[in-house]
Image (cartoon, rainbow, N blue to C red; front, side, top):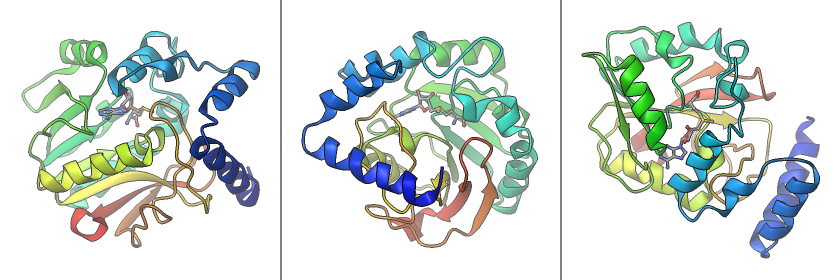
Length: 240
Ligand SMILES: C[S@@+](CC[C@H](N)C(=O)[O-])C[C@H]1O[C@@H](n2cnc3c(N)ncnc32)[C@H](O)[C@@H]1O
């Protein structure tokens, strides 16, 4: 979608959200045949568990974590991310909102990996399937639970599902837990960030208000699903 059309849409979404139009947004989703029942969950855990259980973001042969996690969207990402982690000399990587681990399992490197997700059932499945001496999985809510110690946090396609308040809680949690680097999704194509209910989705440009991140130190193209989307790395000390 062209940048000005996308951003205009975001302005409308933001005004609706801020003026109590959430019910209208939910109704519009229903009218368009989009799933919205998960947005009635009281907690982040309830909302994302409902998304997982009801396969709102897909399933079957594809990833249950959404189109951005399918093979077509990630096949060129695995090697690029492995290179980036090596450049950052990452030794303890925490993957925040690891989803179903469909593509991350192929990212090779000399680091210990900890995948965290708020969906308990998903974490039990990952533990059973993929746990190894250098890989573990924990059910945690990154907005409020203490994070495992690590040097590098990956936050791919997660913040754009969270309200401004919850996304900032995740970022502060990283700082509190002493992380050096964050690698996160940012949408360069939008010039306006809309607030949303956590569990919904919108493009999010971390260079814009209310985040205003500086230029990243490295970027990887991640635009198979959305034009202008990149996975970018910052020093945590530079963004907060
Ligand atoms: C779109 S998926 C992305 C999965 C994975 N990062 C990838 O790139 O394939 C977003 C994931 O973030 C998880 N998530 C959302 N909010 C979270 C939170 N506060 N703490 C931990 N996980 C969270 C969701 O349950 C979901 O599995």
